[in-house]
Structures are given as C-alpha cells and as structure tokens.
Image (cartoon, rainbow, N blue to C red; front, side):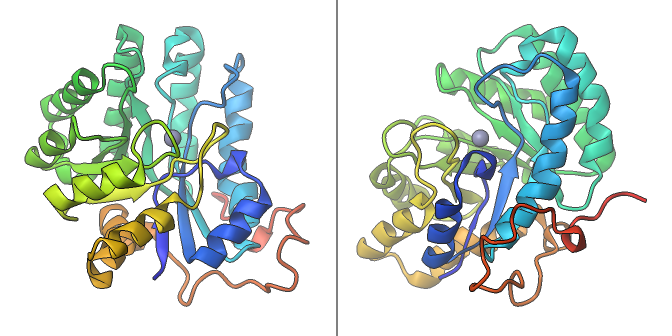
Length: 291
Ligand SMILES: [Zn+2]
C-alpha cells in the first residue's frame, strides 16, 4: 500500500514523523498553506512562509523519500486582519504559479465573517484565473452552515465542483458535499474532528468516489500516521485492499492531476543511509524557481 496524504502541515512536524511516515508507506504529501498559531503581523512573514513550503520543506521531505507538494493561499483566520489580508492577496499570484503548487488553499470560513468571505471570493477568482483547483477549509464551529455557505459561494461563482475539495467533512456534511458534486475531504485526528472509527462508518455509507482521507497533522495534538492507521482499520473491517489503495493514492492523484503533481517515477530519489543528514540545506536540484 502506498499513501498520498493530501493535507498535512509538515512545516510543524519533526523528522521522526517523516521517518515513521515513510516506513508506513507514505510516499507523497500535500502541504496546504495555513495559520501558524501565532497571528502574523507583516506580509514579509508570508513571503518567507510560502518560500519555505515551496523550497526547504520540499527538500526536507525528499531527504526522507517523500515527495512534497503544496497549496498556496490565505487561511480564513488571518483573513480577518484586513489590512494584512489585502497585502497577502496581492502576493499570492507570484507563489501560486510556482512548480509544485497543486491548488489554491486552504481558504474558506473560520468564524464566517464578511472579511473571510471577501478573501475567499478573491482567492476563488485567482484559482479560476490560473486554472487551479481549490482546497476549502470548513469551520469547526458551525460546521454545517459554514460548509453549505462555502459551496453556495463556489456554485454562484460558476466553479466546477469537480475542481474543489470541501475539507474536514464529517457525518454532518459528507452527503451534501457529494450530492453537489464536490470532493469531500476527511480529516482524522486523535481526538477532535473525526476518529478512524467515525471515518470507517462514513466510508460504509458513501464508499470512495470523490472521497479523500487526510491527517491534517499540524502543531496541535495530531498524528501524521492516521491515514495508514485508518486504512488498517478499514482493512480489518473487510474493505478490499484495492479499494483502499484507490482512496489514498488514485483519488488524490485524480483530483490534483498527475501533470500538476509531477510525481517522480519510482518515487523520490534518496539514500536512506544519509536521510536526515542533508536537510539543513535547500536541495537546489529540487527547487524550480521562475526564471
Ligand atoms: Zn490544515
């Protein structure tokens, strides 16, 4: 079994996590731009953050045999600092067109404020201009209302639902998301969001079509192995291995597109003996900067 975790914040994880993920079969990850916990106060910190997930994190993951791709966006929480948000929106196109960017995101609602909506709409327009899919974060409070509103906005803007992931879906929202033709992302967490058992129940009801599974592991209490662990539970419950393999590899590849992902044939070239010894440097051969 090989895994592509389509939502994980490697930036805030340690090298032990990369080692464990590789051993468990994780061969590719997508790191969405997100909130770092401490609110940022200058646009310059966004420049460095975007460069970091495009360059250093890609090198660090490759040192552990994992292909790293990312999404670029202004997260909903920080969209509420409107002065800063305007400045960040201005710099997004510069990063969103870099090699390795597979979507615009995560964007959407947190507290469902007008400022969040403004940044959401502006970024969906950017995605439409650049022909990129979108990764939509849904709020943890008032999830159903936020999810429905996120989809309403996309539909009003004429976004093809096949090009949008509505993420962090739960029992409350998966049916609506799939019924409207969007992709439903499911985040399994050790305690909050979904547990592996709850995801297995959702799977029993909805199968795998347009369904994605991710760990969203970040700086909170999370587990970067929850994609493989959840798949082990599905297998114990009698789900065919071929179906599980589709869920955790073919599905994300189909959504983001093989061309955009540009996964190296045969996996990321790395030497396990030196893994972790070279990550203090950006590996220039992996970083494709615009000329
Ligand atoms: Zn996230």
